[in-house]
Image (cartoon, rainbow, N blue to C red):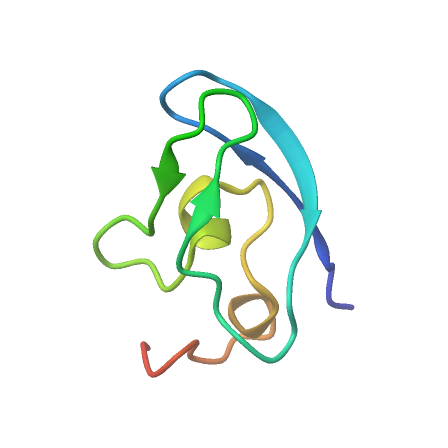
Length: 70
């Protein structure tokens, strides 16, 4: 079963917020609601959920590549 909710935690200020992940697109940017910094995926990750979330994006959960990455 695919989980659509992931809690993103900002590495700069520690603010955590639960967001709904899209099923059909990668999310490359996320504006932290605590400090305002724009989060981008870490090198090797496909999206901000895989980098900063407690649950990876839906395609990665399903064992598939995400946004052209394997």
